[in-house]
Image 1 (cartoon, helix red, strand yellow):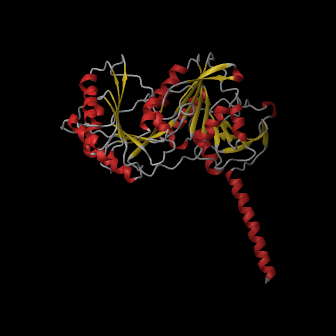
Image 2 (cartoon, rainbow, N blue to C red):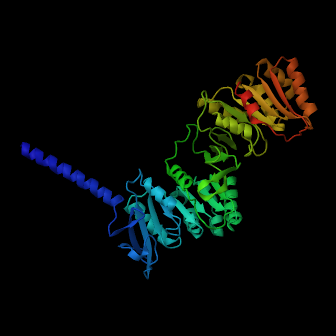
Length: 496
């Protein structure tokens, strides 16, 4: 009996080992003769252009690391295998040209990425190659794409038609077809980040890179742009591929879970400053202009359009990368451009920025502000947000505060105008309710602002008489559109 039990145990172990081995073979194992590509195993294949059948093929020795032998009626394909695959079998799909400036692929292989390539333009053969690698060999269903010049045409052409099957795209002096450019917003909607590296003298920079960037910024997508000074279409890539590799590795990583206050009513996008940095490329003895995520902080942005289950519309929540203790937040009553330096500094300190909802006909509505406040505080946000607004939007802050003074930690107003669509009550009269609750006011105004005497100065006089806490910063010689040093304002706000 013991012998039988022992035999069964041995058979179980052997079967388990066999199954594991089979699983490995059916995921990343490749049949056929292998060659070597820059220190890594390379497997070549032929794809029939009509049937799309894929069969092993041994690369010709005279080709070296490249591809220069054509087979009639067939498309050359290849895979380069890392020494040890990273979790999830990530891979980089080169769109053209094979073995040209391969430094980023070499470094990705060292980090456990597979490299895939098919020697034709995007089309049905690309679909078959994707299925072969993902379904038969267990590669990640969201490859990272790399395309140089014409290679970017292919990367974009395939990706815009399969936006849910792409993790990220690195385009290098990228070309793009008009029909792909017309669909590029689909990639932003599917949260596909882009990296563009180009020469300042490249003939494709303004026509393609800037066109893509403009669309991505409008759609709230993530796009990083690196422009090498004094460089034309060649050379591609970076001699030190570290920035490329780090970007790819970061953007194939599993996304963090959504915040608990986000549901299907919200659309995710990103907010970041477009300010440029000027960085030295030691290996190339030149400088590059760098902008976008990776070179400036970026933040997840959640927007609800149309009426949500919270009874609000057109609301935006910009989340910090790490919320500060107590989940402080700014209830902002006006739209926020990419130069909102005070808000960006508050995001860096862990504040959420919540842009208030607007209705199509009525503008700001008290009930919708109340709905946003309740939704966020029910999810653990501070029960006393900072109210922020400029011009007439500051008036909406005062209107909500006079009805909810116990729910406000402070009001930050820029060139305030005491008018409101939210209420017909006199906002100056409402200052007594706000002062009674000891709500501090922080006001920044230009001395030449046309509303300065009628509004800022009157607020100052009233609030001082009421014994309210008030700090006014006057920008001498400036008008309605003023320059604000964020450090001073943020230092004050974070005291409240």
